[in-house]
Image (cartoon, rainbow, N blue to C red; front, side, top):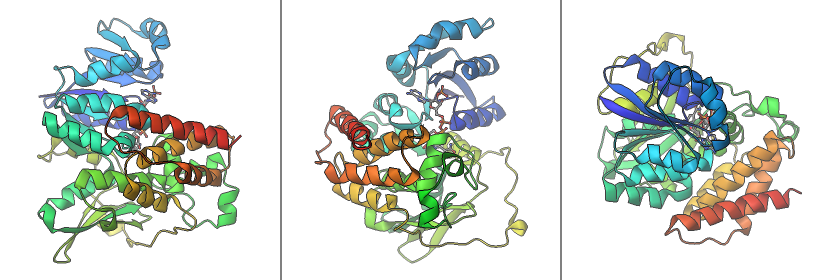
Length: 382
Ligand code: NDP
């Protein structure tokens, strides 16, 4: 029986994680769960799941949350400290990181420092502070298991050979809603059109990141840290069907790929049950219904985000944190109707070009770079 802490249980990944966990009551128990501010959904989940402890990032919501509880007698914590306490307490063996964005950094690092098994969906902390997270995992003996579907696919495919035999990692991208759009159409893109993902159903921030290909950009850096491969050996191909999640090319030119329906329950389940595979709820892949699986090179002119990632990744230090924070801030401004869709590319590019990279030896340096990039984007767009 694994005792789980789910960070970000009210989001898309959090809900899918609870669905997976519900299938295996003899394997998993939810010891604790956290939300940002959606107390209604958290209250419903608490009644269904009955964890021992919960944390709400927005402390002010705790009194209102208490009024929604109907007989549940568990403990309620608040703020970042509350999230950290649940991520590191000894009663949990396994932490699922499903918070969106940089807000997941501090609790994820806390779990890694305490030697937990950590299933990572929340890629932004790894992008911001990869070296710190890997060092924390190494010194505590923590295991990191990828939940992002592409990285789960790399992880699964890489088991076909030795690490030193990997020549190349190929991440696939659906291409998002603007895969075939002209530059002119992208200049006029609305929030509604950008939020219409062709194959995946996800939270708003990652859906916009999929439309700009920033999600794939972040995944390039995520793959570099998770699999210890140089940036030159990580490629992105657009695969609109979202069936082949990633491919690994080995030194003998053999390519091993992982295929599956675009449903996050599959990589979540694998990360939770690894190294076992259990019978799950997903139907088999209907090969007869797949007329073709296609791959095309991404358009790096229309989607400069991929080059931003290679550039930030190779510069290293605080550059990936700036890429991530500038993007988070720009996406928030776009969702608020304050900048255009292509304004995201513009602001992230300017932030990266203006940043003086610092080496990352401590968390404070990462947090300062994050704050600098957010401020830069806000001030530049005024
Ligand atoms: P959602 O927006 O659906 O959910 C985000 C979660 O984070 C919610 O539980 C939310 O709480 C919580 N949260 C938001 N802000 C804070 C905060 N400041 N402090 C603490 N908790 C907070 O996101 P997704 O589930 O789509 O994505 C989660 C992560 O997983 C992202 O990093 C994303 O890139 C990654 N991912 C997602 C995939 C997907 O299919 N959705 C696929 C692969 C990776 P509340 O609801 O209460 O506000």
